[in-house]
Length: 416
Image (tube, rainbow, N blue to C red; front, top):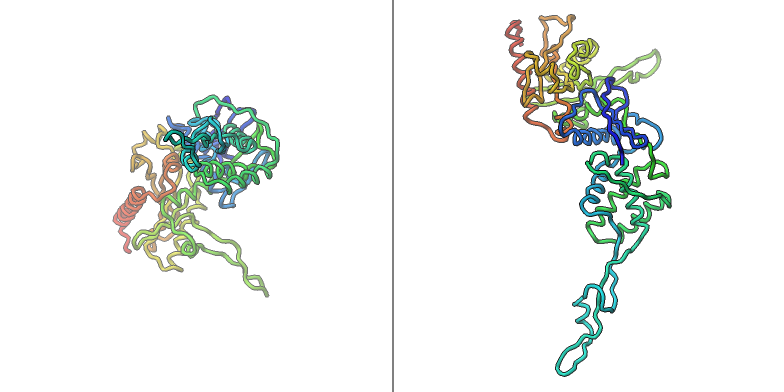
């Protein structure tokens, strides 16, 4: 059983985040904005599961090393095996053996199908058909214990129990997968099928041929991609071919050659509400963890958002375009709690910081997207809620922007 857990805040968005286990010592590297609440273990589990976003999209670099895997850790399978063990004890693969004997559970239907003996007007069944549950396949039990042991070694520290499974690996992972699949195909027991599928998830995501180790490492660099995706899901961003229309492209035209793509810009999130288009840029900047103004997006980020606005306005003919930054923040950071200028909404899970602009845009030709409005989303709240669009957050977000645009135009007497 792991002996110690250390939460390590990480400042840079391109540094390793994830988990490293060395001789039972667990270090979890989290974005600095992560908050250790009372229920921090649940949020850590959600954080580790969020890494799956980068793994399954195949876009981020996986931290390489001993016992690392390019696949996502099957955390749900680890949790299922551990919870099942805590509730029901160790699993032993058993099967029903039918025999003619006086020991075991009487199988009355089978017994009554036999020819009875008639004696003095009585019907006598002299041979009872009985059944017993006996071990069916010791290798399946062995594989189960290996999967349980790996689950405990990797995430057992999330539970308030001191438990350990003593087991050694005796066959290859390839053979174990083959045997479990065979058992899965031959059983009609629903609970067994669930258990075997979880075991297969664990076996198939184990790198190399060693199920057990004293060293594990699981994580990614550039967690910003995960944050972008979570924001996109929470804010109900459009997807697929519809979103690709919002990608500006640059091209080279060299003398005597066909043009070729220089690079493609990709807005993080496009939120469509009625006749308005909101262009969101999710930034893993440290302002929300420090309240330090130097940790806000730089001018080049402002220009990119304005470029998106120009492209959409000129090429897609959308005219009601808005720009916004979404930053992760910690709503319980004292400097934000005590900041009277931070406008908080939805139990402080959404906060409006203010807006950014550039000095080379002509006020006479002011466009609504020339101001980039900056919001914070509580990081722990995002971890718990990103899988479904949050209509309350979205509505409040849009409302704040529309109110600010109206106020800005009135103050500056700008015509549409």
